[in-house]
Structure formats: structure tokens, C-alpha cells
Image (cartoon, rainbow, N blue to C red; front, side, top):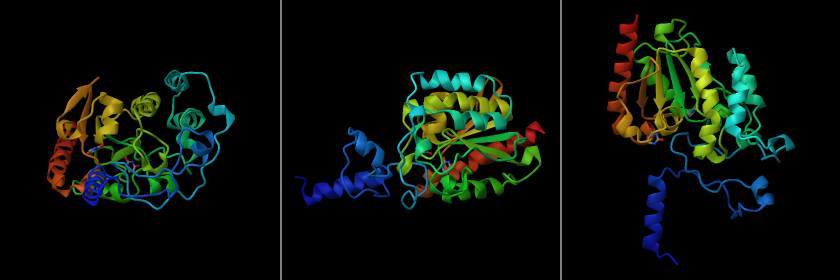
Length: 271
Ligand code: URA
Ligand code: URA
């Protein structure tokens, strides 16, 4: 049995790891089919989505269509092959049966902002407010992101391509309990993300946090990657820390401000 001191250490560690919400009251055997269907996650270990009330929607039994023998990445790649428009892409993601998050989400969170924008921002996955409204980055961290960019005159609602942004996520459904998506979940969405970038054809791509960096760069270590320009297939890419991380670590705001100024400078140079 852990002593009081150990428990304190464990609690401290959990807080450092981003555990900020306890949802379930009963232990769950995740290996039992019954529990898998009715389980609520016990801990929120998400790093980058906002603190939320518990899921309002009951967890549903997955329909039979999700039991598909095809490899999810192959199927996603096939689904995007014929996609020619954002509307087609939205439909393809809606049709894609392999992501279990769709059964516990209220809405597909596709995108927001100006599709003509030169700047495209890629986040992680929707949180509670995004799931309810069906739009990315409309919660606390989204408001911070909007505020930082608006200081340089850039906003998602601006109609001028050089002063606006288009925004989406690596994963388009909310992970239950705001947990971080795991590697194969990121991988199955990668074909959709790549197609999304191709359709928007931005001049600059901003990756917020480790999940977006994993999807696009196959790399983690955002505090090392941030603030450095990369160029892949003629696209300028800038990783920045996630705004939810900034909410918990305000000392990083100074760095992010420098990164956003560098992004603004590049946009001006491209004019
Ligand atoms: N965090 C994200 O990464 N995406 C959202 O849409 C909201 C919070
Ligand atoms: N971990 C993340 O996933 N994103 C950040 O921005 C910082 C730490």
C-alpha cells in the first residue's frame, strides 16, 4: 500500500502529466466487451484540450459497419483518392468506419476559417466545446490562439487570404475523455489530413503541438521543434506549442509570440 507521502508524489506526477479531470467512479475492466461499450474513461490525461464537463452523450454500441477487415490506413487512402473538394473530404471522413471516436462524438469537427487563407493551422483533436459546436478551436485554448494571432491582424474570420487562417485538426472526432490519440489513430487520419492540406494549398502550415507534428513530420519534441522553419514539398512549415500547453505554462507565451511574429513576417514577405 502506498503511504501518504507516496500518494502525494503520485498526485503531483499526475498533475504534471496533465491529469485535470476525474470522470469515472467505478473501476473498468477494459478487456471486457461490456465494459468497453459502457465504460467512461477514468482519467483525463490529455495534454492539449480544455478542461470539460463529463460527456453529455451516452456511449453507444458501435454499429456493425466498423467491423471491417480492411486496414484503416489503406481504406482512408482509398477514400481520399477521389476527393476533389472540401465537401467530398468531409463526406469521406464521415463515411470512414474505423475511428471509434465517431461513436462517442456529437459532431464531426471538420474545419473553420477562410479556405482561401495562405496560412493553415493544424491542431490535435476536438475537445468538449468543439464537439458540441462542430467547429475546431472554439474553447479556451482556441480563444487564446485567436487572441495571439489577432495581435498581428490575422484572424479566421478575415476574408483577405494574407490576413486570415484556415484551421483544422489531425483527428476530426473528439477522443472520449479528451485522451490523446494513439499512434495508429493518428496514422489512420493522416491520408485525410494530407488531402486537406492539398485542397487548401496554403503557403504556410502551422503545426500546434506534438500530435500535429507526429502526423506531418513523424516527429515529437515540440519544445525543441517550435520556432524553426521547415520546408517540405515547397510548403513552409512552422511548429508551435499548443495553446492548451500555453494555458498551463504561460512562460512559453513569449516564445510563441516570437513564433507568431515570424509567421506574420513570412506572410508579409509573400505578398
Ligand atoms: N485543441 C485542439 O487541438 N483542437 C481543437 O479543436 C480544440 C482544442
Ligand atoms: N505536448 C504537446 O503535445 N503539445 C505541446 O504544445 C506541449 C507539450
